[in-house]
Length: 112
Image 1 (cartoon, helix red, strand yellow):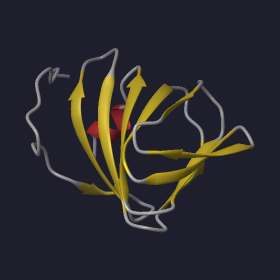
Image 2 (cartoon, rainbow, N blue to C red; image 1 turned 120 degrees about the horizontal axis):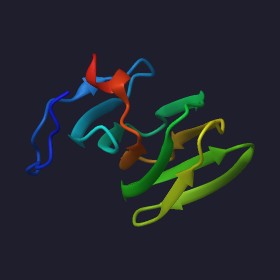
Image 3 (cartoon, rainbow, N blue to C red; image 1 turned 135 degrees about the vertical axis):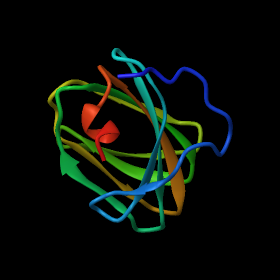
């Protein structure tokens, strides 16, 4: 894998996710990945889990975030962490963007 260690604003193609949202990989190394997700109002990131540790920053909007059965509303400027293996998901209460980091990188995001 070739690491991508610099990104400019607006760079990178958006990919439509299986749940109808948008994502673009911003940066990645073997150890870490930064990904931007875009949601329309009402958009859902379905409950799921993965072995990666995830830290997320709400760049824009307001999201209902569920992690391991606990739900909180997180607004622009807020953030959350998903430990490895916990079931989690989001619902966009208004249009918005999340910036997620994953460690290690999500190889499945690079192969699409």
